[in-house]
Length: 163
Image (cartoon, rainbow, N blue to C red; front, side, top):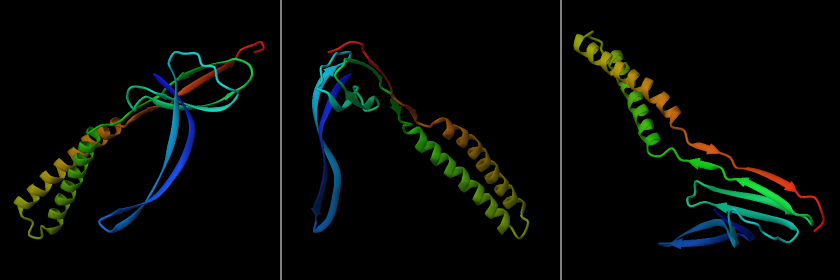
């Protein structure tokens, strides 16, 4: 895992012109210095430092602000992880919407069936049943498809003795 020190952070504000239309652009730019590849030992000047830990993918990334003093310090930083929910969440949302649409359609057929036609009643009941079943399946699956966010953790230990 790569460790970088953030040296400077600058906010960015600008104007963008596209096809004669102006828009504002906001953001920030940061200057980094590579420090090491973990596990490693680093000699840093006393003061406040921001370290960024970057894995091979964006799912494994973390920032750590440390205060370096005169005495040696051992830091153990376990980088958390973020797992996205992927395309499954979109399709489960689509399935839920389809189920709600079927329930609304079945309800409307029942309301508009003024002649008490057996065919319309049968179609309305099928739509209601299919919609309810789709909703009953999609809601628990949607809840299970949530993204995983495991936060990072840090342990610091100041070593005894003088530097």
